[in-house]
Amino acid sequence: MKNILITGSGGFIGSHLTEECVKRGFKVRAFLHYNSSSSRGWLEDSVYKNDIEFISGDVRDYDAVSSAIKGCDGVFHLAALVGIPYSYVSPLAYIRTNVEGTYNVLQSSREYNVKNCLVTSTSETYGTAQHVPIDEKHPRNAQSPYAASKVAADQLALSYYRSFDLPVKIVRPFNTFGPRQSARAIIPTAICQMLKGQMELKFGNLSPTRDFTFVKDTVAGMIAIAQCEKLNGEEVNIGMNQEISIGDLIQKIAKLINTSSKIKQDQSRVRPEASEVQRLLCDNTKIFKETNWKPQYTLEKGLTETIDSIAKSLHLYKPELYNV
Ligand SMILES: NC(=O)c1ccc[n+]([C@@H]2O[C@H](COP(=O)([O-])OP(=O)(O)OC[C@H]3O[C@@H](n4cnc5c(N)ncnc54)[C@H](O)[C@@H]3O)[C@@H](O)[C@H]2O)c1
Image (tube, rainbow, N blue to C red; front, side, top):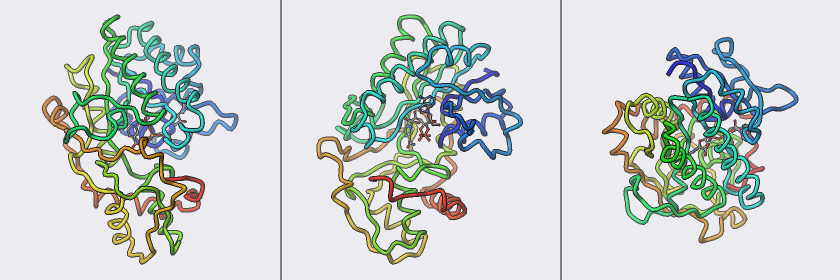
C-alpha cells in the first residue's frame, strides 16, 4: 500500500490520520467535503499541506468518490455524519452519508481493484454492553439512527468481502478524544466550558461509562490494522480496556484545569432513555494479538495535551451550541 485516499480527512480523526500517513511516507490524497470557500478543515494550516493532494467532493456522489479512488491502492474511509443528537433530527441524512457514502467507497474500490479498503465503524454499534469487556462478537444493537447507519455500512462492507472478495477491514474505535475534536463531544465541551470560566457546567447524563482512546493512538491502531497481512473481512476494536463514568471524567478534567465550577445535569441534554448507551468497555485482545499496536497515551496525558491545545484556540469553540 503506497497511494492512499483518506475520506473525512479535514475532520478530527481524519486530519491526524492524514498527517501521520504523510509522516510515514504514504502518498496521500485527502478527500475533503466540498465547500465554496475551499476550506481544508483541520488541514488548512497543516505543516504537511504541501505533501498532500487535496480533492473536494461529497461521499454521497459516486462520480466524485470514484474519480478520487482511481489510482489508489489503499483507502481509509472516515467521512461520516457523527453527532448522535443530530441523527435524531435528520436520520435520512445519516443513511445517505454513512450508508450510501460507504457504498460509493466500496463500489469504487471494487471498480479500481483497491488492495486495502479500511472502513471506520464505531463502538456505538454495540449499544449498551451486554457483556464486558466488549469483544468483536458482541451483538450489534443500534440505539440511535447514527449507530444504525454505521451497522448498515459495516454489514455492506462485509458483504463486499464475502460477495466480491474485496479486501475490506472494519476498524471499530471506541470513544476517541484529542486536539481538534468539536465541542459536540464530551471532553472538548467540558474543557472549553471550564476554560471559558463558566461557574455552572452543564452536561447530559453523568452516569454512562466510556472507554477513551487518545486520537494519536486511534490513528496508530488504524494504520496497524491496515498494514496487517491478515484481517480481511474482519472487524477489529480499537480501545484501551479502561472505563470511566462521564461524571468522574468531568471531575478529572476539573482537577487538571483547577476549576471550582459546579457540575450540573441539564435535563435538555439528556438523551431518550432507551437511546442512551449506558456502558462501553473495549476488549482489545484482537488488535494486540494481530498487530504491533502499542498505545502511548494514558487518559491523563491525553487530557493534558487536549487542554493545552483547546486553550490555544478557545475562540473556535462554542459549547453552548451543542447538547452534550
Ligand atoms: N470521534 C470518535 O470518538 C469516534 C469513535 C468511533 C468512530 N468514529 C468514526 O470516525 C470517523 C471520523 O469521525 P470524527 O470524530 O473525526 O468526526 P468529524 O466530524 O470530525 O469527521 C467527519 C468528516 O467527514 C466529513 N464529511 C461528512 N459528510 C461528508 C460528505 N457528505 N462528503 C464528504 N465528507 C463528509 C466531514 O467534513 C468531516 O471531515 C467517522 O466515521 C466516525 O463515525 C469516531
